[in-house]
Image (cartoon, rainbow, N blue to C red):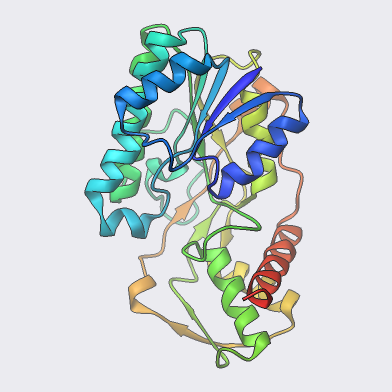
Length: 298
């Protein structure tokens, strides 16, 4: 297939593009050179390239960044999705669209709650998740009009190349800085009791590749492990791998109330046979290795 990937230079895009190429697909990739919310530019690009499938990754992906600039998050995350869906409906109506949203659109659950299924109501609690939930609902409306739209809701994922704006990468970078002696012996954290569902980015891009294939019907799909890990357990594992015992300081700016977000990916597994393969420890080893290489090169 010819697959159009937006946001191809972002964290997930840099893993997805070579993965799709390895599966034999022709890739048409864009990033900042194409303004996702410029409806005319997006329409011209889709009309000219004629994709068979589209993976829409372009977006403001950080909760903090969306909070700092809500207008930008709305323009990129919602208006960008609208521009792409409208362009596809007009110029590539047979193309499959993976509208990549977030499991954060479900909001948070109380500790011990069951994992979210796709039937759970969307209850977004941040600027970021509201824009993504709005785009998800927009995708559903285009699906009702006959467009082949899959609303993909990935839960937390990490790996080499992820920004330290995200919890696992933040912990890993701080530990490597301690290793290198460029930081004291203290690591700054938020709420270590909150529970999240973590995946390796390689498992996530495999899910996206499988969903590009026609056997999975249109609709909503969680991409999740189904297992919860507290931020404290995540940090403990990273510390053990790095053989460090840092001091812990809670940063009020990072702290949020204790909550839980775990996904149920049964629908994805039934449609494609997908299941996560990499254990969390391997993912965290790779994350530490990435930051060692990254900081050594500076």
